[in-house]
Length: 118
Image (tube, rainbow, N blue to C red; front, side, top):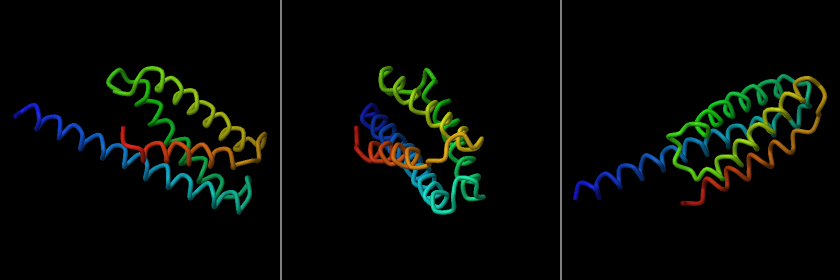
């Protein structure tokens, strides 16, 4: 009986975490879309890149943690994606890159993946 209760609590906690990650990604997507309309040198772009960088910093820290329950191969792939996202965002910040769309598309894909229950 206690094991069943523990499993239910753990599953609910996992669902809440995934929901929080999904909401954060949606917020990032909203900011990125505003930045696309305003241009890569706009204040909207600065805000979107800042938020995206902070978000991926948190996600990468979690993915690198030994306590993360995702399979190692998936974690490694997500870490690679996160590093690419940060590099592309930094390229936009420096004026080397101008296209925000790849950041939007990848964020949307990951957000959709979080909606699928494991």
